[in-house]
Amino acid sequence: ALSLIVHLWRLSLVVFGAAMGISRDSRHKRRATGGKRAQYRKKRKFELGRQPAHTKIGEKRVHQVRGRGGNLKFRAIRLESGNFSWGSEVCTRKARILDVVGTRRTNEPNERTSRSADFEACRRDADETR
Image 1 (cartoon, rainbow, N blue to C red):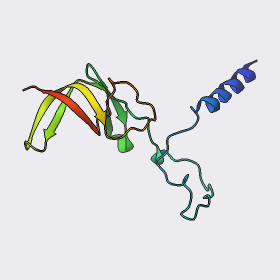
Image 2 (image 1 turned 180 degrees about the vertical axis):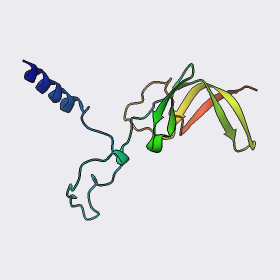
Image 3 (image 1 turned 90 degrees about the horizontal axis):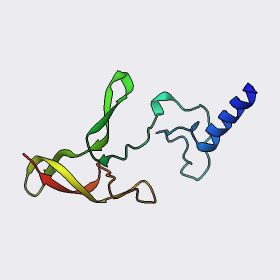
Image 4 (image 1 turned 45 degrees about the vertical axis):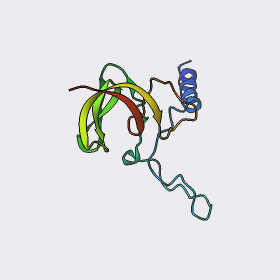
């Protein structure tokens, strides 16, 4: 009975993609001629990639993620304000984010929600606070 449970668990990992991993390597891509590359090794820890944060507007919530060398990265799950610069005015101010107008690019075919924000490349309606 236990072996059946373990087998079903492994099967569910494969079916739902949890056993897969996001990888930042180029070995999975085809050659310039269109031929497939031979797999000569498995994925490595240093080729690791992670899920996008899909930062939303709301009360500040930031997770710490351990990086290479024990360094910490700070992954913003929710934010309500940020430091923004206006190129035309040549000034930078801390501003509260009111709404996300649109994004320059999206990684997903269906837009998530109007409350989601892709903070690296989006236009914002911001309320200047000092």
